[in-house]
Length: 214
Image (tube, rainbow, N blue to C red; front, side, top):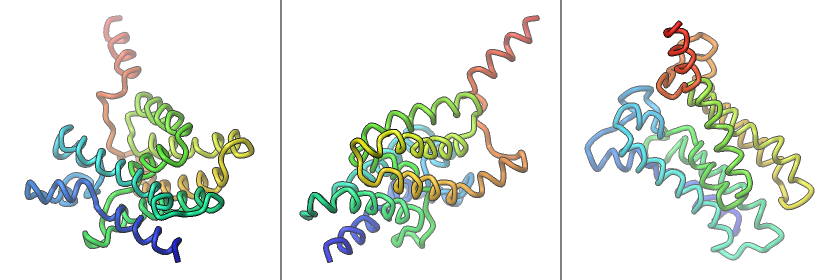
């Protein structure tokens, strides 16, 4: 019974979409702009960095809160880690299919990041580092997000036997979920028409300046 209550609360938390809540305050639904996704990247593209920052804070925060729910409700130490992992994944699903917003939300990456801060802190730096490196090299946010989440798999193998119960299955579930929610990005990458943040491709800009000076 406790597990069911935790998962329901995690889903409801996940359904509180940052972009859609803030959008209601200013009378905007970002699902009608840009990519149509209710996430931080589309918020940044369509409404600017201040709006996007608010979105990310809410979405990361609700992931962290979802990871805390089992402990707050008194889950036993033996079941805590597994229930935390499940709550994070369910919160990400709530973000993607929010009951409060017609089951049309974002892609869940920020929620997973927030959950990792509580459930698996050592993985946070790994995920952020991979995300930044791929983003700077490629300019593709979706690709960076998928590869950063997939980096949880080798990190889980390193840590599985030492400190964290269930790390490997969580990493597999999280990376599979992110690839699924980014399937349209995969299709656009394959077709060569994925949106790219050219200003973030630092090395490409340096090469272009170098070739221009020759």
